[in-house]
Image 1 (cartoon, rainbow, N blue to C red):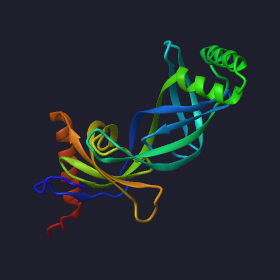
Image 2 (spheres, rainbow, N blue to C red):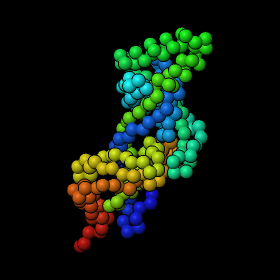
Image 3 (cartoon, rainbow, N blue to C red):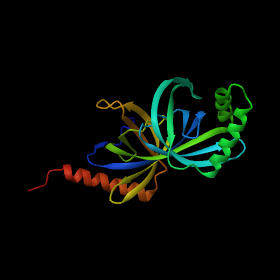
Length: 227
């Protein structure tokens, strides 16, 4: 993790935070039982994600789906000219779908019935109508290092470098923070987890004071007591 040299980093044990995330995905295929998507973020198999599916006509579907599989398919060049990962995933809808979803599927099935190649036509129409998908979720992470200006965390979520994250650190009391992802690397012990360097941004004076007090308490624990 790249943090300013003047900020001393402290190794942390037994500090676990929570992170909120939301990222867009492209719908590849859609059925009444599930959805296939393409995303720049790795989705965790077995996890249930709340999602919002928006059609080009403004139809909005809010539901949840469990990740059945997720695989890395390659890279694309992003707006900064850097190679960005691309993942494809299959998700299974959880519970009964909302009424808006029934309307969408009725339209798709009507379109499919008008075409000889039903499956191909249906997938094409699904991709057009269900144009935007937003995946939301919450994950825990382990704090490995902490300084006044940032932290190193281990998590199963792999965010993009440069993206902004919102998270909570349980210091003396829960502390809500925002940070920019500085670097991401696979964890050596477990390739399904990631070491993420985060630089804090827009930290209020109240939050900074809480961080400073926590770091001071760490230093006090490490300083030998005087006889």
